[in-house]
Image (cartoon, rainbow, N blue to C red; front, side, top):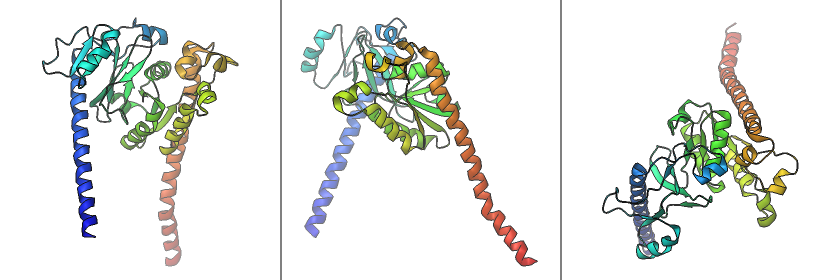
Length: 310
């Protein structure tokens, strides 16, 4: 028993050490990303990816031409062209390598601290900074670029997957929308935001990956959205396209509905807006019912006491 206890203690110490080391590395990466974002220029609406998605630049930035304005000991390396990335990574395995001109999408934690960044290439390819932490972190798309503060004023928190989808829904409803980046991050983001805003309705504007379901036998977008909503007593809404569009064009999200469907962005406003309004009404009814139920025991007790007195 003593040996088992000693072994368990050693394992616990090693796990704590590894956890502390991992946290320190993640913080180092986050600090370097923060320095990069501080000098990076604002994105323009004419960036190829934003043009393709008909999305607003919002708070996105662009990888600068060089790292000259960064601290001398920075772990950031910037390549002028994509062909040089492999060589630079081999020469500097502990560095973060970026390509000039790529979009930079900041990733924040629930307290508003930068934790990572997603790069978006002109062709739409997306990557996360190596060694950073994405899980449970997000980006708030808001027309006024208020960040996390925008969620303080909204009655319902709408969560989508990618930036373009979140921007589309935000523009359609004129409200902040959270980008969780992918289906796997919907659950942790929804749980953290529910914990921070327990009285706000959460609506998951999910992707409907029917074209992937036929290949992988799994519709991850729909499944994870439903799972996330269930864990926070929220609701889901998925895009409904014109007949035949979704299968023939492999459409899946609300950005597709706005930019590639004959129904357009007005359909996004109708479909998501109606679900949000209904969820808010239901939440209000439940709140009133809860207040009524909480008063009943006291009322019944007083009535019983009066009857006994008489």
